Image (cartoon, rainbow, N blue to C red; front, side, top):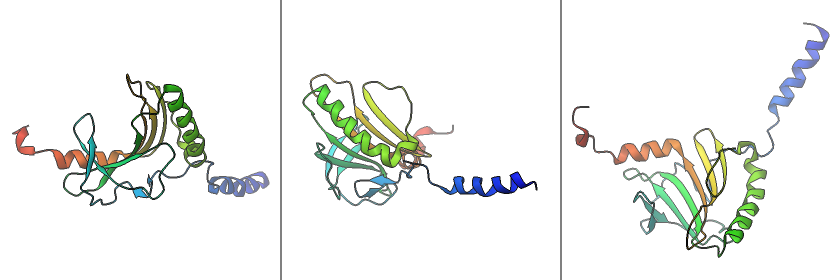
Length: 172
């Protein structure tokens, strides 16, 4: 090995071992872990697809968000999604300002996973492997909600598989 190569190898190994700024693994939030078990039974609402959202109390509530819920698999009760939201921020500008405040904090922890996806409304997405965080001020009429959602693609596949009655599909 040449002298330059001998110097380059330790430098590269050192650089590869330094964690990237804002690149924490997305495992969950608000004191709840994606894929963890959930035993709560109080339904706080439903998704637009009529999937129940179960109420929970976060370890530390977030500013301006007053509702907290999880979506779970129907049989094994594993956590698929974690939600925090406010039904009405009062105005689009107030929603956007609070979203930007969350974005500053989330960038410090997850900025290395920030997505450049094009979305409707005000939306910030952090994606790492099979997990995602979305902070969203959706386009709405009549109210200005703000949503913070943690989700797992793996757990969503499990939720769907537990929801399917294979007898309904006959011999496919």
